[in-house]
Length: 189
Image (cartoon, rainbow, N blue to C red; front, side, top):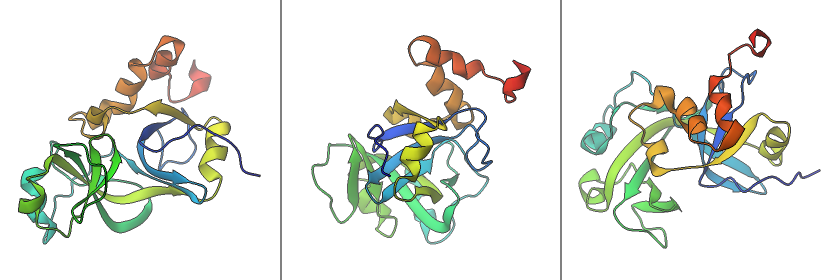
């Protein structure tokens, strides 16, 4: 049975405490794609100690702080995905950039970053991604595992990713902002 849930492409998924999967505990996922076959997103609040190495080290000058590779999720951890803030709104994909939502686009990391630099303001690189099969994300949302919230460009490029989960919750209206104060163990409340 296909469950109807809010449109998530270009929005944030915040893991509700406590999410039993340690891959997603207190994560913030930016959704790149969501359609009837499933969804793909990037965990945007988990920087690693990994720096870009050859041949991707050419992108270092475009990276925004913290300029490390982010752990984008547990699926295909060999995949490297670049997300960029474009200087102008893109209507269609180009050979360098594919629009996601607003000024956010995926960047072709195999392209020459000197050419891409003319079109973008900043870039963040992710290793791996989060993925869901048909109906899986919808079911998890309906079960209360994820909050679907509006994204701001600053979320994907936060210079304080370690506090992003709390920061996104604190800016929500009403009682939803109270979740930012939830203890790791809800029985401790």
